Length: 416
Image 1 (cartoon, one colour):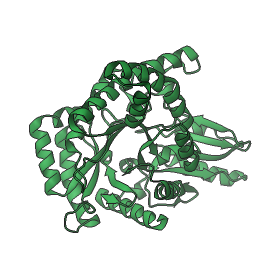
Image 2: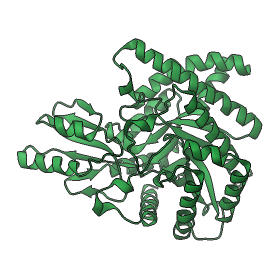
Image 3: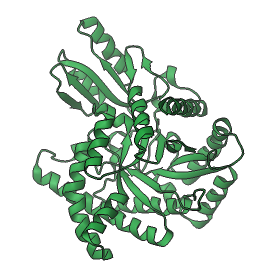
């Protein structure tokens, strides 16, 4: 829905299902009730319910058929809902199966990832609504940070160069598609890369380095030739169509301060495509043995087999140690670890879990910065772990989404 901070919705990767029939059934069950609870007034631009649509590859193929796409458009209109962003990170199974590092597969070295992403943009170009002035709103598709670094000999410069060159070439194929779609439909859409722990792009600095060392040099040369653009026009076009997805959980896990990230992006003229409003787990370790053991046992309650839960430890010397999953971190815990932050998307509205805390304050800081700078027009609540939370945190899914959205509304008002 349209708020003072931009378009706000929740990401439907929260719902299980791989076919379009599965996806649509979940939307039909949850969204009208959420709309009734969260924005029940007569239809207008401020009460229309925003959706961050997640489609598997199979579902995207099925939805792109004219009959399904038209039927979905009619359903959106009838229920006063709209799609303004899509999540193109998980390609295949995302619930009720072991996901772990396979969430990155197929990665950006593959044509399958390219075709899937282009298909999502074609769908989004049809679904994007117009604003009060009759202009189509911008739309974005978030995607993986190119690949998963532990699949490669990451310490070898030649291996890194190959991966960056290969993935960048495929990203530029999507950029070319976005240029064509804008010319055909007047829809400005952007691909939003989502840094996360152990991704090929993990931090703001790595996003900037990839953008300046690979995407711009390769893109300026190719797009200038392909579309007859000047170098300056090609650079501006790339910066319009490729942006950063600011997942608050991911940057909090890496101890990156929101203002620092935004300042770095601004320095290089780079943009944020959307904010994914999400929270991670964190805890400082006491110095006594009993206290440290209590924190360790609390983290063990979140050690589940479906998703990767990378941990970044801050040592007593201020260094950062990275672990690919909770089991490795639990095994390596020693007296030099002063704090842990774990990649586990926990409910936004819970501040603490006993000795563990949420990175909720990072969300408030990002929302305050958004109110001050308005660095994007898209915000998407993304807590997808309801099915794997400890039993005492598992609640009705519609009730849980409602609580998250209301918590964000309240936080927005406090930051204005």
